[in-house]
Length: 404
Image (tube, rainbow, N blue to C red; front, side, top):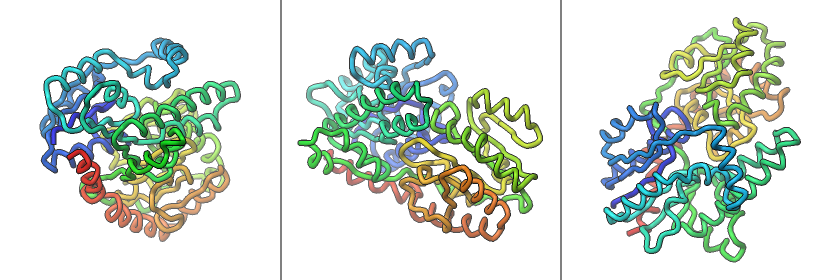
């Protein structure tokens, strides 16, 4: 099939959740013999990675994008006029609209695959069109809902406005797209909550749940330092839910861990660390380390006893937890962090939701090498059997068969 694949980021390197998901989807589609044309926004630092995508077998077209807080204010104000979500207004760029229009005019595509919420707008508003797929990495409105719960009181109304707009918009997408792919069942149910009541039953038949996948061949078990008392955590720190969860661990959980394990250290890994993270590391240079972005996680995993995945807001699946399983890293997370992953507390992972219990679980795992091995072995097995990309993504064949 000829596929026009629309994505908001250049999906390489696979070093963050959205890139990991999209990279493996593209690998799978190309491996199945489809002709894939990729239309993507591109930032300056992503330009060198286009060659890798072309080597994979993709035809790549890129539209430059630059974000600023000043521009975001304008998009937010415009969203009040149009009634569309701020996220949609922010990415509704003329260059992408022109590119998609030109590609559809030049090539007889069989499928338009819109990857993530903001790219869906470029597959709407046309007359006769190819079969359309909305690849929903998350039910985004639920992310705003959870962020609102943890936000200061004066920001709660602002979050609520965007939450409501996204819920309606995602419901409209489920109604108008030929098929929607969610990554977990709770997101499937959340997407349907925005659908017009009279359309819910029909829309439900057009949603598939296909998990995010990882490459368990590339991600091999880590040989951790036996006597380590280091805790590591990671995430794209410019993404508010990631920063929120790690900030909660740093400020509320980690001091409780230190009381019971004075020798413990913390390593925070991720691009664009917030100022307060950097300040904490400066104040506690022997205890807290903030690395920024790193190209290779292996040395940090080898030096750590365990990983924490502290998530209070967010949607979809936590790829960093799946990759921890694949690398045989024992981990502690929250109920939200484990959402949609078929892992069990005490078997593959430890789960705790408040600061006291999260600290207790972390201290327990730090001091119990047998439990570390138990979680590591079971996590690796789960990743291999349930979340390896070559097995999981075969479920997409049934979706693409609908376009034939």
